[in-house]
Image 1 (tube, helix red, strand yellow):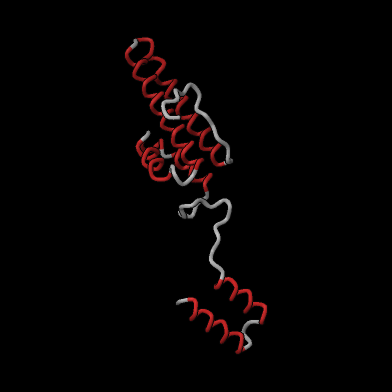
Image 2 (cartoon, one colour):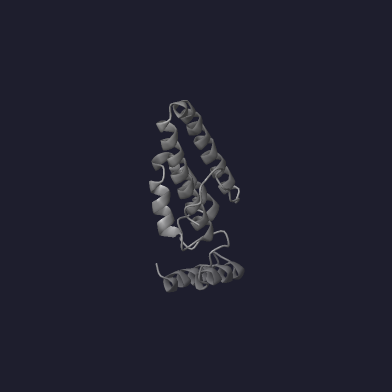
Length: 148
């Protein structure tokens, strides 16, 4: 139903006494006022706020390492500074730790350390998710800044 039809329906309800004049004016104002996004809502309307979106970017590493965060970053980096920052941080983290693991796998001693690094990666991603959901930025430790 278009705005005009909704206004007609409201007027009928007012004339029938089903709603008060105050209720009529309030609902009429809602219909005639264009929606304004709240400060917490990003330019893209996916039904989630920016903090949750960034938290999901960090969590998506569990599904696909760097592929999903890369795609999301490429799609939304221009719409939010926080998404841009988080995307770069995630990609720097993934590249850095992939290189570290490759180097460790080459060495015999490193083969013993790789599982420890894997657990550390898991823990760091969890910390990043929690920080993002709290609205904080977090830099993964020992990450080389390939993207600035």
